[in-house]
Length: 413
Image (tube, rainbow, N blue to C red; front, side, top):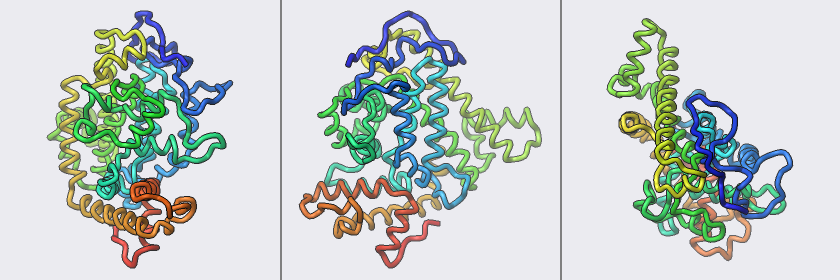
């Protein structure tokens, strides 16, 4: 299929513009690069609508309901889970797509699939699996997301995985930027590109040295906005931080003073909600205005020009980037590294590590198809199968399995 994504017409979006014709730099669903396994086109849906629907109906999507974001789900009914976080990211990403006249369905699909590879117990589970998999290439949740949608979901008669379009897979793998080459940054600037990504790229090249589409960039920054804001909210709900603590933050502190001035004596639940809704709005409006400026300066003629530009277009302004980094540092110190959170997450890491060791020693304990034909597997393939099995678990299933296989299970409270 053609890899040309539109033609230039010189038009630029306006803030608040909804629906309507896609911008020239948006991905054009009629010019998709196709799927790994060839399928007939849908008579009623674009490729990206089809991708979104497959993602929502997948087993991996349902499992997000019972996977930790920051706080274990049973610590309180109102804390975010991976599923509620994913839905919030999708809403923010769609707002960007609507304002910038991008393909909303592709943006939504990438937002909905971005956390598929997360383990039970959030980053604690990932740390445990990465340590156990060190000699076999490590564990990376982004690479695991790719494994899920290209191999591990087994629902369709004609292929493994979800057989998503090239553009959705590209967005999943590269939403945080190129993985190789001079523009590579983030985690992959310090460690090798995960083997599962390289293996799939050898079969279905995803242009790992280029930036991703604007739709993928919108999903990536929506993730930052969602967890910055909602981890503050959950930290307040958990009592790890207090409303007065927000005063030390440029963004949240300024909003706190503004809300108090507008609504003196407002009760705490409404006060917190007013802060958080404004927090999201300020960041979203900043990104739209900044991105419009970048697009106006660069004037990419189509989606491929965006990929070749060697830069990220969807971004915070310098002032907002500074405030956002300050918020991340605050959350890291006051929430993620709080002693009570670290104590629980340390126990969660132990559960995952124990299960990994036990399944490697006795792989038939995994049961079902996971234990089939394990005798001929080498050490690396067996470890990867165990890793796949563990990564797919929900928090509750991992705890239940540990209780089944061990005499004592750590108390995650």
